[in-house]
Length: 435
Image (cartoon, rainbow, N blue to C red; front, top):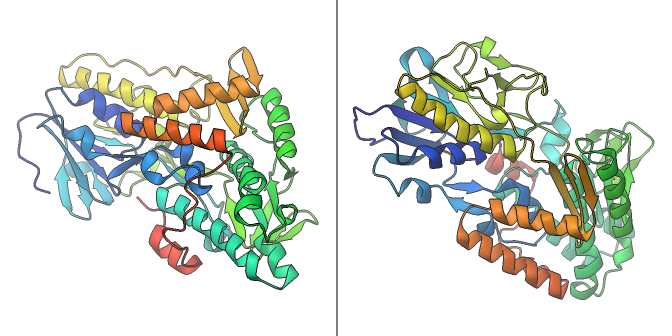
């Protein structure tokens, strides 16, 4: 890997997501050598991926080069690589570009889409965890609209204009709201030969309300907002099968569609090599103690979505969202310093800053402990928080001006088919989620 030999302790971080980024930034100037490994050379701000999917933003607005982090220190390095396995007894990471010995290993590989064993959905459905996948969805939506303008078969047109999303968590709610706004504001202007009323957005949820992780107040408000936008919500409805043309559910509902998006869950993305006892198989996450040490290992840590830390308040682990990942990354930086100095480790305590989701223009819901609100002010808070946590001044500036433009003009400037969607088999080979 061409990493210089050193007498300093070497910390290897697998993954440049929220957790890995937070850790790396805190140890850059410390007396240790840091090596970050990732299969992409950029960090993705995943909460805004849905805006890339629906033509609101270009991908470079939410992606940040990982080498910009390491370039400020001559003791820190980034390597573009896929991690294949870990040999804990040899303190070695095996990657696609070679092996690397570590003193301290931090696994921050995040999560991947959970299909719950349904192979037909995995094969034919769309999902959205990476920038390439978001671009696939954007291209497919626009290509289907183009195809709908020229087809003479009314049944084919109906399938092309049916958009079905499974999972009414924050991703499903935000994505369905964004597609509805695309129909309401863009289609009438860009596609005058299409009737917007023929374009239907169906949101399917297996539980009895949208936004199950949030409060009932937020669920009720979001439900109402989605209906105002024209989204058709189907509760207590689970997808059983999708063959590329027909969505079948556990009810009598069956929908013909050429666009089916799966946003119904995530699971951990572990690395091969650690003892089976370290992994909680059902969740696919590493069990960690209060110091984020992986069960059975003193010098191997897991942070973010891949880590499951059981506490009295969170017996099933912390939520798989950005805030626990960021907080664990920052806290682990302190504990690694303590380890190197032979000092006592400090247990991690999660501070829940609340949950929020946007439904569309002037529409959002926010849960902040005792305060629960919705509407324009919630939407403003949502925008401010997401701008604040975007990595890089350029990204914040570009995103801010895009949002201003979209707001004033009721427009989405990024509706370009830059990379045509090439079909499901090629998609699977290009964008298969792996560590």
